[in-house]
Amino acid sequence: MHGTVTAVGSSSVTIDTSTGTTTYAVTSSSVIEKKGKTTLSALSTGDMVAFSVVTTDGTATIVKLVAGGAPSGMAGGCGPGGATSNSGGSSTPSPPSSSGPPA
Image (cartoon, rainbow, N blue to C red):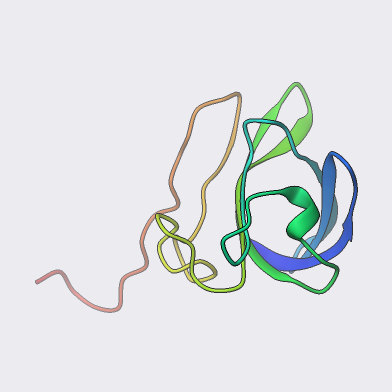
């Protein structure tokens, strides 16, 4: 998924996406990347981000969030297939987009 940071808390980040604005939990397991920095405090309101989340017991938690350019391992960031989203703790990648018949 991708969006724009609208708020940064001590253990959460609020992101505005095409489907609405949501506050996500950030834990010690969350991976944050912004220009070589790896802490939540490196994020700023207005940052464009690509991110993936996991939802457990009704709480959406950031798995990986990268501000700025295309994140490593996230298929170009904000394009199709650029993030994973899941529930219940298993990871399900987004299907890749296709632009024609298979080769």
